[in-house]
Image: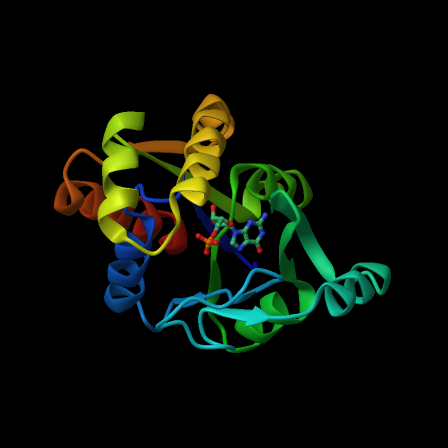
Length: 188
Ligand code: 5GP
């Protein structure tokens, strides 16, 4: 059976670190699913590794060609989507794709693939802590941080739709909890 693992979390909730550690622990079982996005590339990011950075025209063409499993306008004017090709590529290697997508995209994938999906929501300790982490990270302008915080509050409301909720009050503990859940799911 083809399986899918989804980790969703508001921006700044520690998801990137948890994902990296998860893949490091299970490199022969999991592979990061590279999404397509229309957002500008950030310093340090690599096209074709972090995302496929595409134009709005290319993204819309892919929607028209039914090339996405799911896509969302995650932020005003910025699109993100999981491509069918990327899922197939990972399954063909005998691995499961690890999706880093927003809650609404996660719910779509769950609706389509049902029991083939393990969905985990990483919950930040509080909105205040989240804001602090985003400011410290320094990759986003304040206006963008405000957008991300507003989005985070919306996302936290949707956590009940996930198979598991993992509170990230301690990064090491949260990582171990996620590893155990994914390990168990992939072994069944
Ligand atoms: P960032 O711009 O910080 O890389 O990501 C912003 C948000 O977009 C994150 O919550 C991330 O999980 C989400 N995201 C990334 N790729 C996808 C995707 O393919 N589909 C959906 N629905 N959300 C995505």
